Image (tube, rainbow, N blue to C red; front, side, top):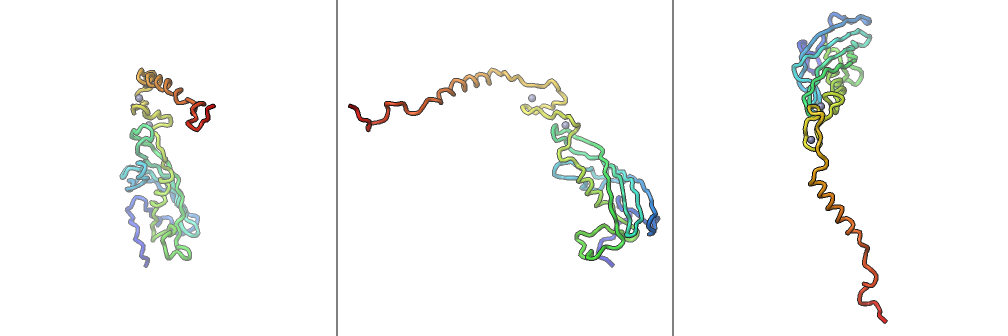
Length: 205
Ligand SMILES: [Zn+2]
Ligand SMILES: [Zn+2]
């Protein structure tokens, strides 16, 4: 007996391979919609798959010599915040997942920190592969739309709602300040000590 936790056949990404048999060459397709598990995504950037949202799974299970090859398309809804305008965003992402589940772990698989995916009884768990694929597919800087204009850098206005938004650049206070700078700058360019002011050591005839 192995110490590893037994898979829960009711878990969303645990697939039953009994119908497949262990004859290389047999194949089975399955389609199902399952609820997203918790923590699917990157917490740090605030983008991920909301727990309990629908995940559409279309998988092909193929029996091969050493185990079961699973090739799947997984459709998830990614929710988060637009990195430019901070609006809520919600978009469907399609992932390709492929994983080989072996019947018997290879040599040295006993210390299973980095255990290769295995068939456990008549079950295999696609969840770790789905998690990896989701993390890879999530955008680092998600946008609500590709040309999101973002926020006004001066006042934070939401530019998509107000395409005409702009600020008067000829604010009289600013031009007054510019004049002031214009007047004081040349004064700083006064040359060094003028001739004839060389101090008391200078000989006078
Ligand atoms: Zn946006
Ligand atoms: Zn503004």
